[in-house]
Image (cartoon, rainbow, N blue to C red; front, side, top):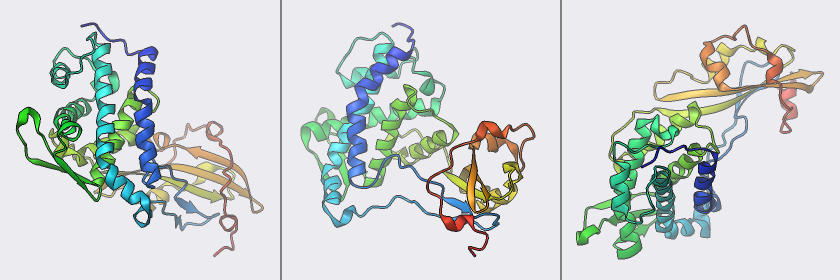
Length: 326
């Protein structure tokens, strides 16, 4: 065994390995209008100099049940499962090779090695024992189910739900049921982790909480236990104001409106402030959550607003610029 470096060249090898399957899994869920990583515009808008917000809901929705897309995912659920396990397997193989192990196609060998105490994971995983333990748990638990789907066909797929039993060693195990929602969460976890590892994406505070929440939803598959992560919700708040100083925005009012202290959720916000003059947006600022989070209910005195100037968005609605919009 060698001490892995996990440098830029090794990250590139990981990205190249998983590129096709990552694209394929994202494409499958995009086809059925259930994107794994949807993006949302500003969902909470305060019209110019108004204390009352308008809420815009961009929740994931799908009309695929009306056409061929729904049947596509229902029939393709086993294919999705096999593809996402392949991504996880490629991640494990890559880590093994970075630790100096020669390629070995025996799953049992790989499982034994990654559970060894001397085995080193990349820092994103190594510094998060909760993530490492659950990835190993998923790999070990899902591997025989993958073998059944590939080799023994001892499974059913109905309405997007897979019911499969391990047939490893010729012994038929208990039925494991993975419904469509769990399969999508599993795909989101497996596709995102290599991107956090190779630094394509940064695992920030919100994404880490979402990953923990997703892993809690998969507790029956990794069998490590719950992290008791509350549902993380990230909102983008837009405020229109005629005040030229964006720091005059009442943060306490915004935080109160967003129920920032709900016991069942962990809510975070980004804040976009648009400066309005004579009915026209003339300036824009974007304050990300890390800047707001430690500051309590007020602004920090050391914020340099110029650092947070941003482009004026092109989706402005004229009614939000008018004080007489009602």
